[in-house]
Length: 123
Image 1 (tube, one colour):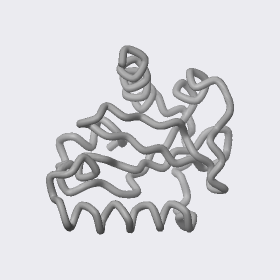
Image 2 (cartoon, one colour):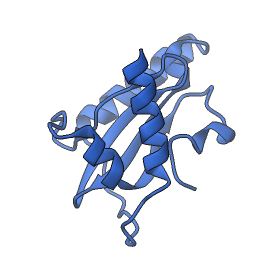
Image 3 (tube, helix red, strand yellow):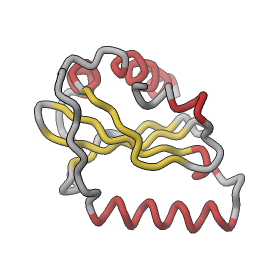
């Protein structure tokens, strides 16, 4: 639990230190993520107070590549970044958190309002 809190804190801090000047170009979502989001939306539509309703998917850039990361406020879940090809990133997470940039909201559950988005996405 302590490790999750530390990862959460580091990810919030790193979002404020985006160092790349170029805006992220919009890319299509990978099929695996579209399917996951559809599942989450269907589930939340049946149970609006489920834990999935407090989750967000964020797209970031790291070393020129696009990654997706899921976080959930209620469960304190922060998953490792996943590449477009659905590979879990195998590198030093501290390096990723320090050098990631250009976060962009991909999806948010219905219980995440605008005041919480700043925890996950740069304005």
